[in-house]
Length: 252
Image (tube, rainbow, N blue to C red):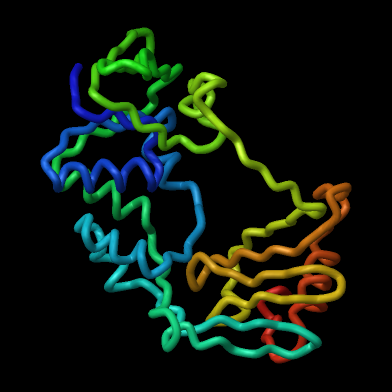
């Protein structure tokens, strides 16, 4: 099999790149180690910034976003027991939430894009030459894709990054002296807009994925683990840090 661009990773980055390349007349094949159902079942970050919204429209996959996206006209900053609102609509143009991966898959289907799922043991080869290639397994059969370029869109822990020679990669890392504890909750968000909380006990965030799924974070010690934070302790700490003026009945 041959193509111009071989893309490793069938998440939003790989799918969006494949879609944009297609619209420019450039062929690509996307390799994803998981099934399509598994990828669609993952819940990733749900806030899209203004520049990415424009990119979705350029990729011709913005229909659902424009119809159903929840526009955030602002955010709340909680501190000293109070909340203050920042008008994002006036200052930056707003954000939107949508089922991004599903829209991208539908976009690739509409244009006849090739996304290969359940691709096991994906390996890039000859990346420093003008004729790189990728191998993988489908069941008991070995497959090969010859291409002009290989794009690694499989994240920090993916095979693409691990395949780059040590003398060709430079890593920059900043280690912070705290950890995050995040909870994905099938509850209505406690606020129509995000709340960022600054508190003497640590940072907290009230976020969302939809009107039925919420995401909450609190700053914790690096020495903590999940067992240290039973449900009651987590919700009480989140309420304490986010302060007054919020309807916390969704936590009950």
